[in-house]
Length: 353
Image 1 (cartoon, rainbow, N blue to C red):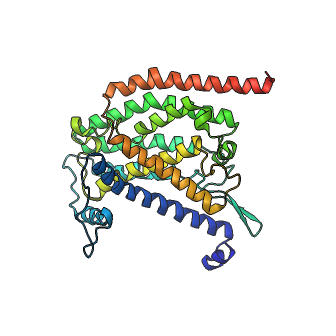
Image 2: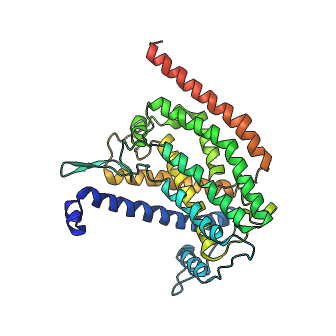
Image 3: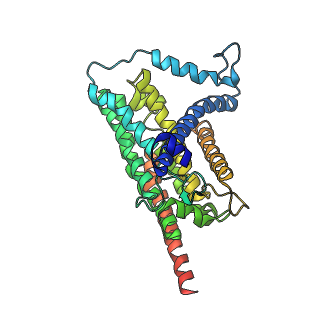
């Protein structure tokens, strides 16, 4: 790290921050891009199709991966159409408002074990432990992402887009409370909301998936609504409201909105892994090395990202009112019951009953 700092003419902590920033941005963007290919291949397998197999370089299709480059070039060359009655400024800013919060949510996630070099401890997360925000930060940033959807829908001046935005805003109110209570139960069990402490408290096999199955069920279900994915993709609802909030978008603005959705999937998977599956912890390994811990975190993250894809092509879309019913009358009571149960268990341990 000292050598890198001398090359960059900065202090070692600043050099490490630059390395982490590049790793997180490049890693998340790469996984999100590959997920678009995985979704096509996965849906083709589920529907007994071949999937992308036409784009090639020198006759090599690379099992459809060349399609990623072809799509990127296509979006760059497409005409950027702005509806004549749209609010041009907000119409242009909306994709960024959806994209940036999706990426920022990864800032506090520890994606590997800490290590020491030159007597200095380095942490594999953009924000170091004790930053004062902890796991409250991705929840807050994730809630802000809905403003990108609302801005895109309102600025388009399109009735289908506005319907999609109204759905997104109304649904967020119904499921956010149950999701937050599920996360608070984890905070109560750990006694802290710092993600590094949450990962350490779970150990190799003491995952909260086993200890709080109700909380995991609520949080996992809410993540599908948070990421606008089937069976809760009401903001798009192609069979009902054309394409929802991005009906009027084209070219790179449309690509940015689509990429934001897949980055949301990556961030949601990282939150599930951190809160309920031990983060970078490796089963049956008490103190994994840096490389092994990073690989374990990536393996869990990719698994849950693929689950998002699998569920989309397996379950039909719920009705708009059914999610609101589930949010208030199913997920909220379950998350409250889970929180009360955790509080009771802590009381029993503290009183020695």
